[in-house]
Length: 157
Length: 157
DNA sequence: TGTTGACTTAAACACGAGTTTAAGTCTTAA
DNA sequence: TTAAGACTTAAACTCGTGTTTAAGTCAACA
Image (cartoon, rainbow over all chains, first blue to last red; front, side, top):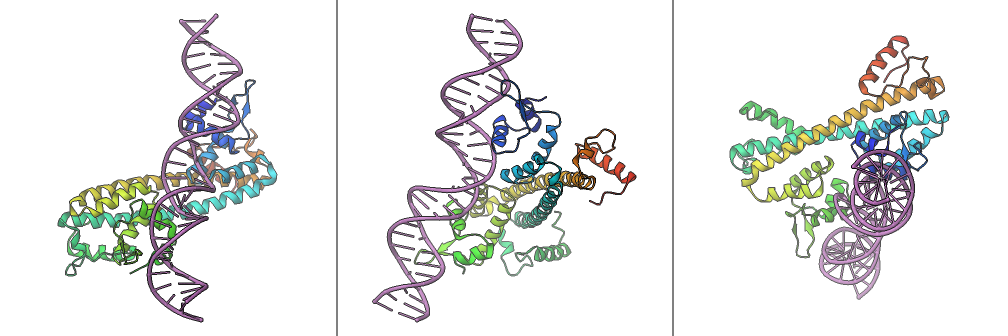
């Protein structure tokens, strides 16, 4: 049996956040003692873990509440729960792929600034007589990166 | 030269969002025509791209505004801009790694529900006489996954 | 016996990230 | 010339995600 404070420490969040989640329907399974205090059972930790995962994945609280409702409804919703997680997995995959793209762009901009720092000015990317045209797309960047690699080895991303 | 509407279409956001960003200091470089309308120049698109990347990476607007201020300050801030992007890259890497962990957990839960659907009940994961103990950590899951693989090939994640 | 410390609630507050509204300007096409 | 359509602003509003506050209950310890 865990108190709200125990869970707060375990998950590294505030007790007020837990109460907020409870109000929003994320914790219909928690029981209370005679004094009305929340008592988390060992098996409740399985729910907590799923909630934590969905939260970290960026799923809005009301959507998590929907999933939890399915969980409480019994074996009849098993397939629906699977399908929900399947959809969520796809969304998370897309999200990660998108962040990877941002990472690529960030690395390109680091290269842009690294070469600028070395030249002492950002203008090396503007002057028409250098080969360092400002590549805008990632494809153009890869190309420019290859070309720059050939000329001098300024780059170690 | 692009109008605010052109940029909105290009970035697939609303014009009110663009005006909001402007108010918050993300667009100090945009000039106006005689009537006070924003005119985005070709080179402004480079800024727009960086802003878009940082936004998608989850950087708060006020932090982006800080970076843009550095950009406007000239070559003296080149190193600082590089360092900023370096820090941002590290944060993004951490974020992606964290989402990967959530993805692993989500796949485990999909396995949990897939096997439950096949069994017709979630209880296969509770009964002590089955080998399908509810694995809580990812390590335990990997272990259970291996064991389950050995017994029957229920799993194709 | 009283005073901490951990819990409870409802209601108010905060904050980021926009959106909506109301009132006005400017261009263009009928 | 007037109506539509794209722009402008400031201010108010919404929404999600909590946090804070105020008032109260309960257990344990000095």
